[in-house]
Image (cartoon, rainbow over all chains, first blue to last red; front, top):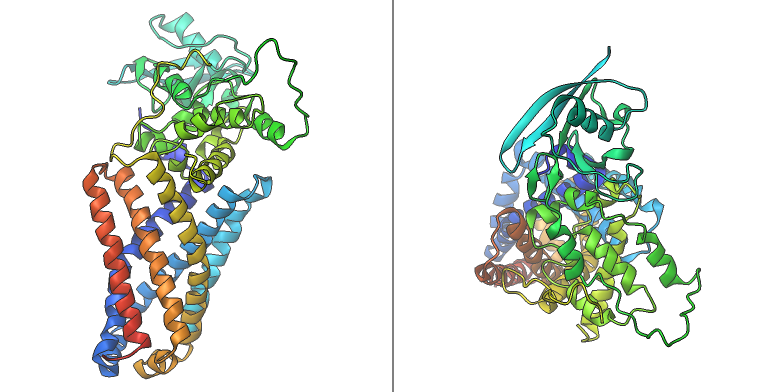
Length: 115
Length: 237
Length: 132
């Protein structure tokens, strides 16, 4: 038999899912990011055209989500490194809260600076 | 009388849930419920238990979606209202009803080199292991495993990669890696390396969350990850 | 030596045919690149949040970056870590969620790593060194 969501419904499993999905989303975004930066080879004007396109609300929203995902992948990754490389202690359970909090703070800081 | 609505898996890999009404008792364990069904309602129900006191590891089942030792799980703790769903453990082939085939689970202990390989003979003096030494402390943390397979059934890496040795076997290997009397460290680290070994663990922590003995197999596996990586770094793997 | 487990192979061979030693090195590479990325992403995030304060313009970006050799060196290291980290992670995902465990996966992942590295460096060159 297979497990369903009831077996998985605990904080560390959700942390895993966030880590995997954010990693996947960032990997898909990377080629577009590199392509966009590469437009600078065709001069500043081309870069400006692209940046104007990013001023649309929907794109800004997507950018904020990407910053949030990057921050979540960073803090979640630091948590994993701590779990794997530091001696096991009870405090490591609370790492999850810190990781989530720091990621949200980064996303919020971006959003506040953006608008 | 206050009745429990119990839904129990009947059949093998294919089958379905059947409903039973079981009288609600005080201090009733999930194993009590299963036993009541088998003795008073349907004698064809197959399940497994032995000690009834949390020592033998035979009675683990999936209760309301979560793997648990049923003899020490109170109905009051897991019932949703008056309803309980009982299924065989996940990640293991079902023999009949609530009985799973544990062969693959225990074969993996052997594959992870879960056997003690003594360095000395009976002619040598007793080994003296200080109780506070780091190795002894690390081994102690994992040594109380009763082999119930709750961790194995809860592990998604096992579901996604059926070759994965799983939390219990790797935890066992880690206790032996820390046994200073053991002489098979190199072979054991090689046995727990690779696609199906310790590095496949994703730190979901499901094993540690569900272990009825409060062992943290994730920590043992992390220890193996470091030891195997160090061995590879030194060219000893 | 021990008795009960004598009949068993030392370990199951990875389905994709990758050796235990290679799998271990992939794990080491994944964790080492993660540690490097932790630093790079932190710098990247701070830069992003700082840079968007007054809105982005091509001139503002290129003014900061053009001819910045230290920036190019940092960015190249960043790209290298990404080209190691992302493909290894995607490889595991493909194995576990798609059941893709043949040798073809390893080839695709290698090509992806090289492509990310080359296009990442090109992007860095574009921003830090300017129009060719």
